[in-house]
Image (cartoon, rainbow, N blue to C red; front, side, top):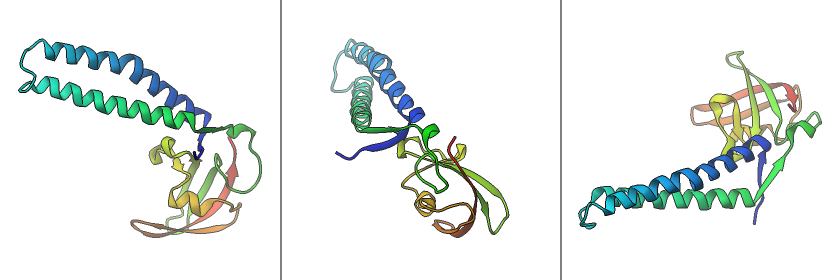
Amino acid sequence: MDKVPMTGAGYIALEAELKHRQQVERQRIIAAISEARSHGDLSENAEYHAAKEAQSHNEGRIAELEDKISRAEVIDVSKLTGDSVKFGATVTLIDEDTEKEIKYQIVGENEADVKSGKVSITSPIARALIGKKKGDAIEVNTPGGGKSYEILKVAFI
């Protein structure tokens, strides 16, 4: 089994989602199935089929979350140091075309949210950054074409 790297915040978020799905969603779906059953003929009962589909989706997500949690390798970013980019680093870049500053933290796949500045360790930009240091230039192939960045700062916050 491969370990799944994640930050402490990512681990807590997974546990919270799992708890919600097990204790809240599961009960809500069971109640919906029970209500739909009380309406009679199940073969033509759209509410029943929708509730059963929701149950299947929820149970699948619970299994996925339990798997990720069991394989989690929680990395305490505050204890990391160094001057090269690695998992957990917060990297300040400058776009060499637009001169715009961008800040990204390299996180686990399930924590990635580009809008909040968190990129997955498996993303093209993170793969290009790993091992680089302040002052290095990188090239990233994006769906919109190649982009060039210079690393201004590497921090572990």
